[in-house]
Image (cartoon, rainbow over all chains, first blue to last red; front, side):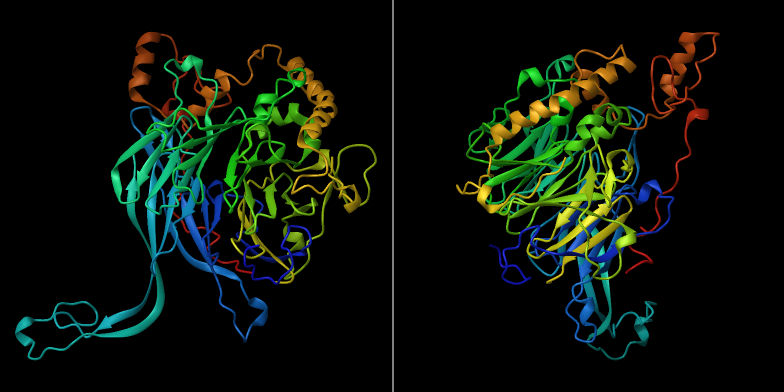
Length: 453
Length: 128
């Protein structure tokens, strides 16, 4: 059990009482496209929480220190820094727009006072440095306080500039731009445990970068067929192993996961392990392959397991067993009888993410109607909660929600037909140590905490 | 369909596996799930009879690889004009973003791009 800040109880997903903590973002009904949150990520210590949106902007929140004068605001996240990470671009050769939407943010482990993160859109990855400045030098010799140059002939004495405190200023500056390495759209970035390299994955290729070098990148996986007519699957997500710097996994649109070992060869087109759940061929339908497409893959913190998210379920795999997952959790099985309309409105292609809690004892993923699901792996209990403004009183407990698949709808249940499919929770994040979760509901960011916290 | 909480007595305590083996779960799920999924497939085929036999194949993937707004390209535009000679260029259908057949985006078709260089609403105002 990781050293959880919230007391000694086994921190599963459902022995806890989740409470509303904060919500960020505008209340308007009319959501501007640019305000849609496209990625959420806690830093390694959990004190910073970064969001990226479709408008190419990054907003970073910082957790407030415990404050004796305001005991109830302990641990609130407030805006720390915001900047425009990516801007809309144009591919002149193909006359195609390059969206500024931030697809992923990944924090680098902290090594000094400054914080670093990687943010990426479809084509370009950027390394951002976020640093604090709380001192300013005063008493320069060659210029006065407002910056005007002093007449050198008038200077009769030398003085040593003194550092004076100033209001905290948080600056974000782009330190590296990793461009022009991807023909297709980048879906994942992952920082290696060696803290020197990272991978970026697009639909057909995975590249390995060194954080210091922007003009070169090594291609380590290439699944592009010689003849594009023969294309049968694309890469949907990729991640480095949390401890073994030579191991990475990538998932495909056909529901398979390949584990590659960079020690075995420079080009990892041949996998070391191949994870696929056998399918009963008689149950195959038009939708089978589409709903089996893996939208996210995440290693457990322990490095022993990995979790995959497909359209209707989350699966936990033991890296030692390729033949089938060790756990399958149904997210919204009631949608199986709605696949036709979900195909027509394109919802069947929605890419949900998933995440582990700090101790790997619970997993979380989003659904529709602003519902999200948590599964406790030790008690095997699950719960459905809702991110909604109606339940946003400080420290208000979240009530479990229930969806009625058919037949008689009980009181407090929501019928499948009244689910709002435009309210999708695709991005969620769990604090690396404590029971604090961040849930992105379109343009709003909800933060929930365990009551005991 | 909801996963009901299991009583401790039901659990077979062998490491951290669920009370039933995943294999069985999948079979049961397949049997229960088969009917709704097939029914949905029939519905879809009824609406779109021309839908291809290889659903997960090239068409989806090619569409996915080419995502992104296609803009006006003067080269394409002039080539198309030359080909058409005196005929009118086909005008945009209801979906202006989709470039199909001979339709080349013309200046009139383009949606106006809004500048997105304003501060995010997450960073201003409503800190609760």
